[in-house]
Length: 82
Figure 1 (cartoon, rainbow, N blue to C red):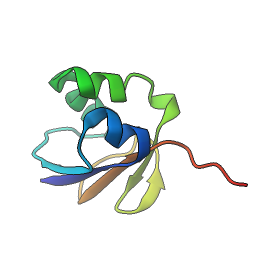
Figure 2: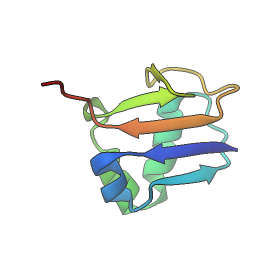
Figure 3: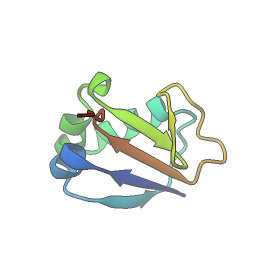
């Protein structure tokens, strides 16, 4: 089981702040494909992964990163400074 956290507009589009999922995904990209195939709200949220960042167990990562041993995946838009 993996905990998935959604932040900012990702959370707004999916309608959940977090969920726990059972997945056979080997990479973050595989997980995104599984989620996007669930239903329209996920497909919309994950339509453009270039507009997303991902953290695995609270460390910034890439969509090609393996999920083996990961307990938490967080999706959020790029952060802006000011």
